[in-house]
Image 1 (spheres, rainbow, N blue to C red):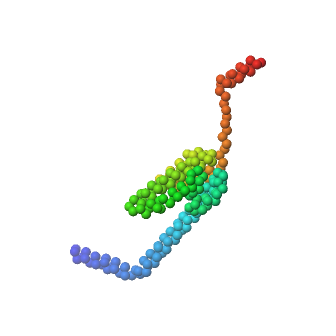
Image 2 (spheres, one colour):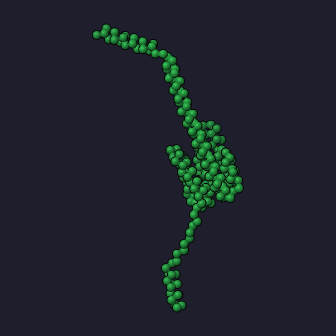
Image 3 (cartoon, rainbow, N blue to C red):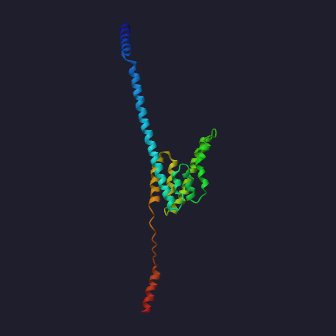
Length: 206
């Protein structure tokens, strides 16, 4: 029985050895090369698509903020189109000093602090979001809309809500920029007592 098993094992090893010897190593090289090329193409397509999407989002935000600036009678609305300079537009439109726009560079400065740089940078990003909400709170109110709409930006803090928050923020900014709020209609309702007095005074005159 032992001898039979040895014969079977030896035959199996010989079969496997012959099989691997007959396989051309170039097949594996070609397969790996094809796989690497396919992954590179997919990565390139994703990269180009992401860049195009980012450019479209940038153009949209520039259009909305330049329009909002014009409607708030700010004569330098073109600032919304300039990278980095556009960060100073929100403080200006919300009646803050333009220098507050420098807050945007805080995360890039703190990141170089050893050990705690990442944590401080994260806190700086939270500060930027809070300041953005404060600015938009004032700007939305100036445009005649509810200031609470600015609170949608809180979603940027929650990772799995960032994409939905971006869409909601773009929709809100589009409304703020291109849709003027309807004027409020004040309807004065007379109190019943005054109506009764008017009726009595008219009947007495007759």
